[in-house]
Length: 346
Image 1: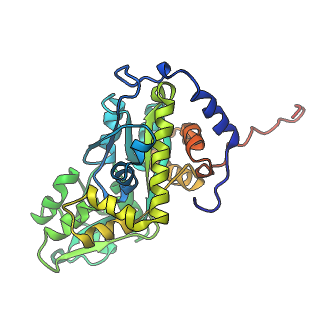
Image 2 (image 1 turned 90 degrees about the horizontal axis):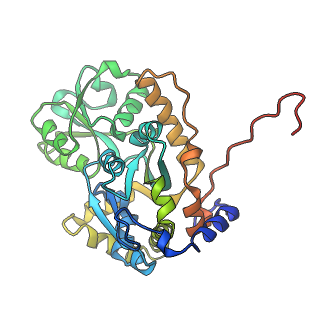
Image 3 (image 1 turned 30 degrees about the vertical axis):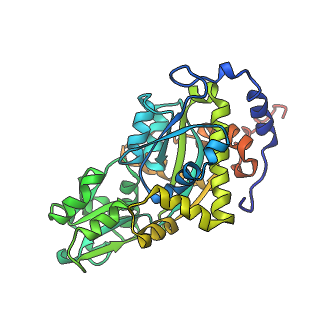
């Protein structure tokens, strides 16, 4: 796996002991051990580790059944997880930071990829837009409570614009490309593959794509705390399957790509390759993931006008399952002990 990972032996031992519990203790939502884990996620090539593990049979070889359920955005997967309709959800840092503050039973199992250019602004050239600075005074469609909202503010800030200098229009992700094509918005903040649909909905040469090198998004696999207690063996098996998919992508990329192609049979070859190249797939509970969550948490608190202290996101990282499945993938620093007050013994 990637350089710089360090093993968390204590966590791996703890989870190994937990996995020795009788299988009767590992029950799913319906009370039947060994039933499929339902995993909600957007249909995105960037999340290809899940598709590869599914199509290449890595989940099956680990003895776990996974049913993928596709939803429009990570915020929707997270909502269905909270409603008890899913066992696991793939979501993004923006909806996660708000949900974590309101639902303390959520836990992050691992990241799945990081990317800078998977979320973009697609703008209409005929509205005089060439660069981010040209968005001043324009109507910009953005699905609220998604990473696209944080991306847009990041793009504006580093272009010398404030959020109040654009007119943000809340759009449904799937409806965004149509709104741009009809001229209801002048630009659209959206992720791939919907960004491609938005570009292709405009006349040839009329679409302008604006990106930001300072923006970083992180996809993550999230679970409720109750499933950590009731199905630990299945969660470790799931992560082992994903780790096998990651190794396949690194060591035998052609074989991994064939599995990815099988998961997206209708996509054009050039689009599939381009979307897969946009992200950096990989499992991990890392300081980079923490930095992304903490940055977006400060943004979310400011947007909501909240004076609450930011969360310590180390508290919601479920390091045990990943440490048991792939020890070197857990590299996050643990919280420092509180300082010793004067006159106290250390």
